[in-house]
Image (cartoon, rainbow, N blue to C red):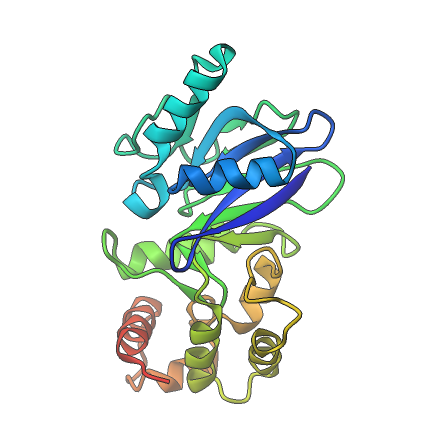
Length: 259
C-alpha cells in the first residue's frame, strides 16, 4: 500500500491510499474532487469508491457529494460509494464509525476510527499510520473550535499518544514551519525542534512535511504533547498549573504568536 498526499487549497491535504496490487485508491478528505481525480490519473490508478472523512469541516468533507456523483456517473458499479466518518454531519456519510471500530478499505487493508480526530490504518508488514485531520499537526494541534482543552489533551495525549511511536502521521494542513517556530519559543533548547526547523528550510521536503514524521517524533517536539515538560510548564507563566491549564495557555499563546 502507498499513500500519496494531494495538496489542495492554500494549505490543506487530501490523500490517495493506493493498493498497488489492484491499482485502485481510497480517498481521504476529498475537499476538492477535481484535484483528487487529477492526482489519481497522474498515479494511473482508479478510485475504489471508498471515501474516508476525518471530520465534518467543509475544507475536509466539502467535496464528498461531488466526488460521489462523479464516481456514480463514471462507473455504474460504484452506485454504492462508501463514506466513512465519525460524525453524522459529514456529507454523504454511509458508515458511521466510532472509537476503536474497524472497517475494510476495500483494498485488502484494515482501518479504524481512533476517536482522536482521525483514522488509523493498521496495515500488515510495516509501521501503521494515522490521518489526523485538524487534531494533530506536525509540531502543533488544531484550535478548540468545537471542543475543550481537556478533550484536546485526551485526543493527543491519550488516544494518539497510545499508538506505537513508529506510527506515521498524515495531517490535515501544512502548518509545520510556523508551528515549529512557535514551539521553539516555548522550548528554545529543544534540539529536535531545531532539526525540524532546519528540515523545513531545506529543499528536500519541498514544502511537504506530512507523512515524514511519527507519533514518536511528536512526543519529542510538539509542545501540546509535552504538557509536563519543565520548559513547557515554565513558558505558560502559571503557578503550579494543571495539564488542562497548560494546554489552554499554550493554545492562547499560539493563537496570538507572531514570528
